[in-house]
Amino acid sequence: MKEYILLKSSKNNYYMPMKIDMNIGWRDTSLSSLFSLLFGDFRPWDKRFLTQVVSCYNVSFIYHDFENKMLYIGFSEWELSDGEMHCPDDEEFPDYVNESNSCKINVDNYLEFRKKWVELKQQLSSFVIIYRDDNDWIDCKGFDTQAEMELFVTNYQPEAVH
Image (cartoon, rainbow, N blue to C red; front, side, top):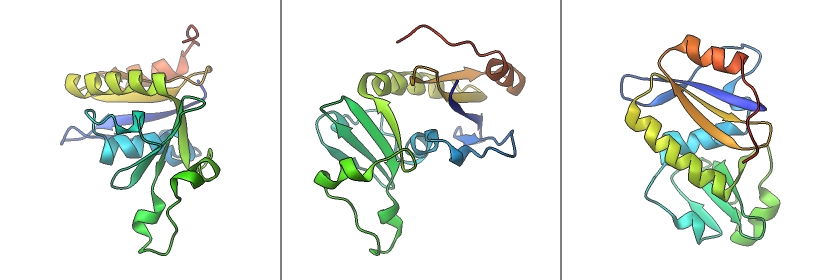
């Protein structure tokens, strides 16, 4: 497993990041951009990102690299900058996105992930992990207890190629 974010359900059925290792914060991973979208701007019915180069939401963006069939999900810093920061034009996004400001994910992977995320939210799992496996596939999994989730991380074995 390359990276992960551990989440705990709140009273309002939102998932909040847990910080288990004090040396690794959840924001130190590219998955934090994906989590930001899921927490504040996720619209499971919205499929604009499949046909538009850039889809902007409240504080998130999805840039679609059609040629490579990749999505870059990031935090729209310019939305909070009082107009002091330039919002990249569609043509500027390929040069703007990188590993520090966005989460790179294959289109098919994101579509599968979205479906699993909606299922997890409906199941109301107490604990959830979002993780990037050794093949760069992003997945999520629910657990009843924190101990089960931590055991999954400890005993993780790479899965078959997607």
